[in-house]
Amino acid sequence: MTAIDAHSTGPAPPAPRPRGDPAATPALSIEGISHSYGTRRALIDVSFAVAPASFTALLGLNGAGKSTLFALITRLFGTQAGRIGIFGHDISLAPGEALRLLGVVFQSRTLDLDLSVTQNLLYHAALHGIAKREARLRSDEVLTRIALADRAGSKVRDLSGGQMRRLEIARALLHRPRLLLLDEATVGLDVKARADILGHVRQLVIEQDIGVLWATHLFDEIAPGDDLVVLHQGRVLAHGPVDNIIADAGARDINSAFMRLTGAAVDPGSPAP
Amino acid sequence: MSSVTVNRHHSGFSLGQYVTCLNGIVWREALRFVHQRERFVSALVRPLVWLFIFAAGFRQVLGISIIPPYETYILYEVYIAPGLMAMIQLFNGMQSSLSMVYDREMGNMRTLLVSPLPRWYLLFCKLVAGTAVSLLQVYAFLLIAWFWDIAPPPIGYLTVLPALVVSGLMLGALGMLISSGIKQLENFAGVMNFVIFPMFFASSALYPLWRVQEGSPLLYYVCLFNPFTHAVELIRFALYGQMNWISLAVVVCCTTAFMIGAIYAYDPSRGLVRRGPAGGEA
Image (cartoon, rainbow over all chains, first blue to last red; front, side):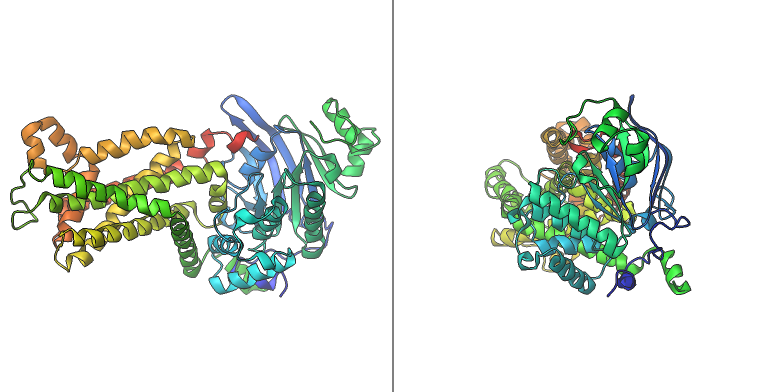
């Protein structure tokens, strides 16, 4: 079963286009988004786009506004100014159409710890209107893919941190979205688990043509071929291919490019503070 | 892509998908309830303490004259049973909303709210799920009460069901409305004190309203305007195969109002938006 025809009980996605097709509708378009909590401005005129079947890293320090942006894209908060589109569907005007094309892995854990691995997946499938038989097939399939099939009946509480993250990613993909958002998905994981998760997500981009927005504050999670959005104090400081951003900043690597862009002092090779 | 696919893509969700979603949410709520055995036990022990201890003690103090729907003199235990059934639902409604606050703090709520189905429908499903759990609790209570000689006519066990559904929805919707306004889990204890106890005591659950009127006309009116009184009366009449139309009207109107309020409060452009993101994220 391919990712496309599996939508028989779920939403029909827009046809995938070849990577780099300039005519493609962006998987995610953020246009002039501003957001305030009272008098505190969390996002100021943020605009960028994520192409289908591409990996875009959203780099920012803690407090840069990444989570606020995620809350807006997932419609946990209403947009105060600007427009957010998912494959052309406006998140405010057509939230159902937009959300069905979107999978999300939040920074905080959102699994039911007392339910089993499969029960968590079935619950998520039901929330997307996927009938039980199809949901079981899909959950078996994703569990095999993330090598958790033997833990299907285990309580989530008994999984390791890395396994939980893998499960959350699998869950986010259960309804076959075309766009996947991950908010600091590797926080709290050891080096190996981090590399596994990142590798898994990059694989999804290549194999399943999923557009990924990967929010992080860790430089070493950004690869040379990625698109990069640098978010700092609620503003987009740079947006484009990583190599271009480094060249434009006249820097040697992403660490120093980020340092120059933000004026922050960052030790090379270490996570941003 | 075929035109058929395109059409379906724009047609929103099928009835089957709505039903699947409802089933999934009720199923999860039931599973969580089963996993929390202490919750079930305490939900049962609370009304039983009132029944076995409070009512037994009060039996001699408070005489109940013949008032509808009763056709004969009744024991005090029999009188307060419907009030205790409503109390189970009141606690359950508040507990469901407590779990919503907990889910929101822990992030589980996000799983629910990023579902592509309409948000009002998701909240409605959540409400139905909470009500279903309250029905389990009430019938377990009725079973034990039967051994305590609280035996309404057999048909009453059936006729009380729709009344319990409506009252369960009302109290659940009230809890949901309250949960939307609570910023932190810790604030909940205060709300329990300010909502549960006043609602329960200023109602016809423990004493008939004519007795209250004798003691304090003001309290009588407070009780009369308390929606919980009408939930109790609706259950009381239904348990004896009768209908209390005024109570039904009040309960239905309150359910609608609380539900609309909760949906409004959980609208992404209001309610939740006033808070920052959970856990100090930015």
